[in-house]
Amino acid sequence: MRLSLLDRSRTRAGRPDAEAVTGTVQRAVRAERLGYERFWVAEHHAVPGIGSGAPAVLLAAIGARTSTIRIGSGGVMLPLHQPLVVAEQALVLEALHPGRVDLGLGRSLGFTPPVRDALRRGLDDPDTFEVDVAELRGYLDGAGAVTARPASVRPVPMHLLATGRGIPLAARLGLPVVVGGPVLDTDDVTGVLADYRRTFRPHRGSTPSVTISLDVTVADDDATARELALPEAWAMARSRQTGEFAPLESAASIRAATWSDQVRRRVEESLDRAVAGSPATVRRALERLAERTGADELMASTSTYDRDALLASDGMLRDLVG
Image (cartoon, rainbow, N blue to C red; front, side, top):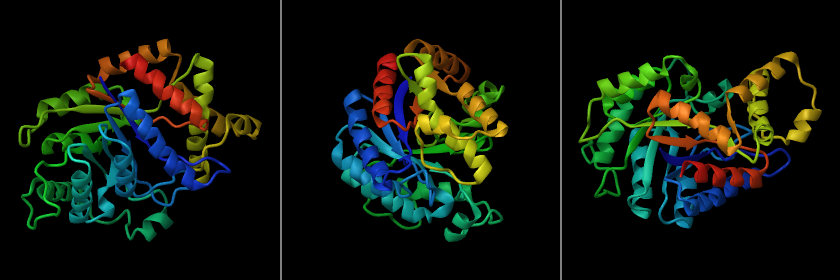
């Protein structure tokens, strides 16, 4: 499998949000040196635990500090933007960093009702995602109702971040699909992806492509890796209780906190599902996942409180997959 990274600019408790953004750029520079295929960033708005809601701005900074690694969004939330504006942002990035830009597209409307209100979006708004994706592709292909500028000699590749219903859409539109989260935990993921490949409708010579995205934490031993994965599992479990996705906390502070039975169960379930362990443990888990999905690429979305441990995990993952 090809190997890539998705960095969500996770904030840390007690540290400025700006460190999350500069840390993302530094991680991208190192990922290029390690030989990763691509480096993607995310779009999340007004979330305490995530420092960046502007992928195009962050990618411009990353592109200026790198020279070979592909850069992209994982993803731009298309329902929050006009397709022409998204096309223009992607084309400016392509002009600055030719042949290196990917456009990953998602459909999230925002984490909480106040955020959706601030974005002028509601859960009851019409779902125009498929139409908007087609319109956006027209602008990127140079076939839109107007010509998006700067015009490019090559289309910017589009990828669809897919939940269950998004996978058939990717097949209908002839787009690569990025699959993560609950979809990977389902028993029928093999059949779902087989259907994607079988029903795929090529667009300008495109072929089916599956990227799996999940947290992968590698350390010297299983116990250390599990402890490194704890802050993300804790933040996720607490968000379901508080409605707020919080900055990462240290494992020591988490262990010292009061855990409800429900939070404890959710944390343990999350850690049990995570791909976290020694190189040998992670290799076995990834081999099983590759067999189930036939994936062409792994995009590791790992986050840890300890930045040095995160960079070490990136290096160990590259070594075992490479």
